[in-house]
Amino acid sequence: MKQLLAVLAVFTFAAAAFANGPTVKVTGGTIAGTAENGVSVFKGIPYAAPPVGDLRWAPPADVVPWTGTKDATKFSPDCMQAPYDKNSIYYRPLDATSEDCLCLNVWTAAQPNDKRPVMVWIHGGALTRGSGATPTYDGANLAKKGVVLVTINYRLNVFGFYSHTGLTAESKHGASGNQGVLDQVAALKWVQQNIAQFGGDPSRVTIFGESAGSWSVCALMATPLSKGLFHRAIGESGGVFGPMAYLKEKKFDQESAESTGAKFAESLGAKDLAALRALPAEKIMEAFGPRGNTPTRGIVDGWVFPKEVRLIFAGGEQHKVPVIVGSNANEMTTLTPRAMVPTTLDGLKTYIGREFKGFETEFAALYPAASDAEAADAFLDASRDRAFTWQMRTWAREMTKAEVPAYLYFFTRIPPVGDHAYNRAFHAAEIAYAFGNLDPTRGYTDQDRALSDAMSSYWVNFATTGDPNGDGLTIWPAHDTTHDPYLELGDEIMSNQHLLKPQLDLIQKTMDARLATE
Image (cartoon, rainbow, N blue to C red):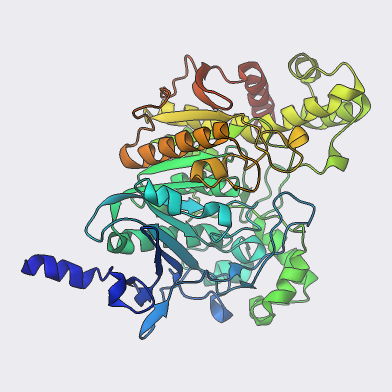
């Protein structure tokens, strides 16, 4: 009895312990959240010091302790960013943005002495936008299915991916430019140190993300800095298997990151790092622009990434954790402005000459377009495969080569969102299904809800055991390079083989040809 009372004293979870809701002691002090329908929610928990002043562009520093009990009932501001265009399907109003944004959020239905699997969501947004507070990422439904769910913020755009000779000089590793990745690592360290307080098991942490969040999952599997911080990974529509930029070298027609950084500083009239740090965040954001006028990307800096991610995987040096990876059938419909989609055969020919030079005959056979009316679909399908489908197959194959379980999927369900006749199974369409957060105002059907229940179960099963399969679910075979099995998540859930094999083999040829020129 005394031992039980001691445990309860440490894990002060009961709502009666604090007038405003459940309380938990974490790194930095005590926080108070809310509880509803059996799920406790804690928002805006700092996992690092505010990256302001001299800490702007520095690696994340330790949390600044607070006194008393910190209100954890509201999300922190989003990291500095510009909103999407209002006509974008991804648009949402920004309530507040700030450099002081390195916070995370926790949903849990666990008791404090439970050891439930943990899922850490890394949001997408091209590394330029997004937030762990996006309503689609609400973790209550996944928490009810048995996991402790965490969403994080990390520095974005020029605040999160900026190289400068001054930053490189002040780094004891002689590196700069991957601040957003370092934030993600810091958040995972916080999870290791604190998640047991929420009933989570630090030895069963799954990282998952979509688009730039999936890119981040892939990158975290490659960086040596994240070793031991997670145990499974889910990547939804995003990998890092193409050539990367370098800190000091120009490679693959990409300027060095320091060169890019120097041009950005010049555009602001900042002669050195001190001048850059003295500028208001809003002025830096204005110079970056709503569409981003300087590259936002992870770079080979010799520390966070000792070499390119593709080379780390090719050498079998990635973290050996099971993965679920996949993409959607119509990724590019919502990612490509319609004015940029060719609507004539001449327009398609220009695209082919630019991206498939030397492979025109093979392209015509695999992405046929006999009329102007078919040009758009040929372009959208080929662009999808270059940017996403090939990346995810490559990821699955590299894990299989390393004798680590990999599960490949292809999402084909058309949700009732936006212009669904054109958008179809668009980029990010699967997120609401995986989280179990289908908007009741959108017109989702029982078929959608059944798919969502199955997807979220696959995800939770995987976080629990490293295998997505379970009672009542269509069998999802692990990947192998002989049959290339994958699970189609669509109007029906079914296992298939050789996803777009001839098309992806062509993409592989074009990538090999590009890399051979370097």
